[in-house]
Image (tube, rainbow, N blue to C red; front, side, top):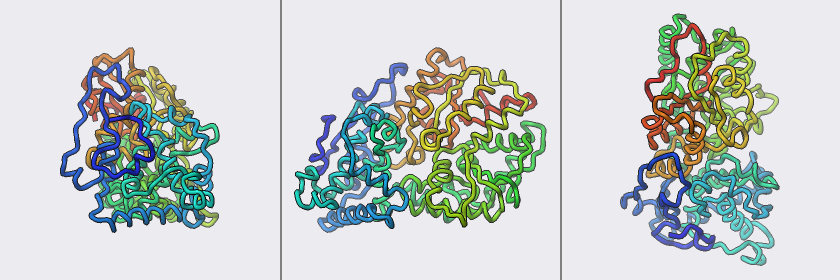
Length: 530
């Protein structure tokens, strides 16, 4: 199976994958002594869904039953692309998209910046340039004067078959939208945004999206209150459990404020923290109590979950959730919204929502990390309680897309005496492999692709950061101030056996702060992987 695919081949109808991954072709993980093998997808999947991109599926698009269904797929995609090129159809990113479609020097700078392309063994279908060039050719052919007049001489050779469309949609979910490519581009072309727009066309025009992002994501959140399925009653019970747990750990009874009107801060965590990492919201309750802040949580549906998966695939769903967050804040009469340790939620509410808020519903919004940095300066802490190797994973949506780089480092310098950076780090960081929704997407055999390709660069970074302390007798901590990143890191630690082999664990930032409080029992359990 060849690694370099021509765009003309991308249109060809076939039942075999264009690319088939082989372990020997992937970027080497030299420190690891072996890894789990790649497995073929079962025939029951490949007979029903189109796996012909790379023998994996994130979306699982059904194979059309007849020619009419094939033609309908193409027509709907072209109609959606046409809407994308209008202000009404693309109120979020029209200018950036048009620049990306009209200008590209094809210099390839984006390719070496892309962790997925490099980790795959430089297979060109995973190049940011390859994916975007397909959409550019469709755009030039159908929606430019030169393309309509001169055909392939102006637009490039492209044939819109049903499999080109299904493969292109799948290929948009082989990009974690980390925007490293945009940062590397000498003229600022954002190929990650183009991947986002392909997803948006598929969702808003064709009704095609991963179920984890749509039915089990934004739809469930708007219906029940959280993408986790947590309803308001369940949330209130969890808060009560948190208060009991905090008392057991600190000896102090803290009343966690819920629905307190007129508080200064509405703190919204990713609800995944309440389900999987309860120690993180507990840590913030302890820290905010000691800092004497005026704050509250909300028990309103959506108000206790900062998740906004719409930011990855559908502007309409994104807007519905962001407006709900703002509405709840105004209802409580708070002065500002503070988003907990969650990268995509920070980008969605703090950055992207700026494009739709007006003077009538505007409210200040910020990440918790700068606030935590200021609080830590005033707390009585003993960093020696965290005397174990710590490295920092930078969530892409926090550093590169929200510009928050130093506050988390200021905290670590105060509480983690053995902190060391990954390389590269800060705005040059690599994605954990769970970005753009990947962390929660587990359908078909997509997990296999994630661990082997999307997360591969992060696994390499972590191993290199702890290179001199890999003995399983030494506890090690990957600080990941983002809920989705923690989910992906947890999963690939299991896949590669990093806890059993090297005693590498992970967690958030606030947990390290509370663990450094002299009067708190060991807040971080170093004897078990969670």
